[in-house]
Image 1 (spheres, rainbow, N blue to C red):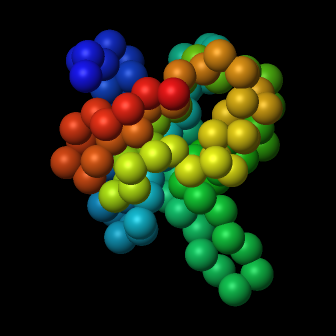
Image 2: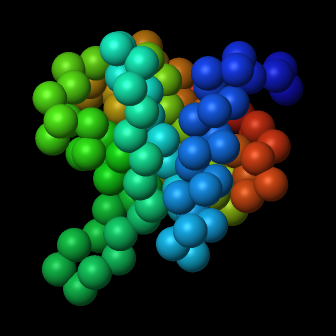
Length: 110
């Protein structure tokens, strides 16, 4: 697996931080086309369930973002979950989405 560029590595660090801070199963971060970042953890309420990636995209969109440069998710999973990936693709079909393990090791990029 290739090493991440510094700005993408920062996304992984932010996603790890969100996951650790909340004790959530996942943490995610997205970077918009202006270089701003949005960070979120998975949400599990009785009336609302969002993956961390969905929540990060929602935070970006609610701030007026129209495109993403990249995204990162930190999870125990072996693949990027489909609903979060779809949310990223809704904004920018070509944006790379990096999946890292809880230790920050890059697993894959889609």
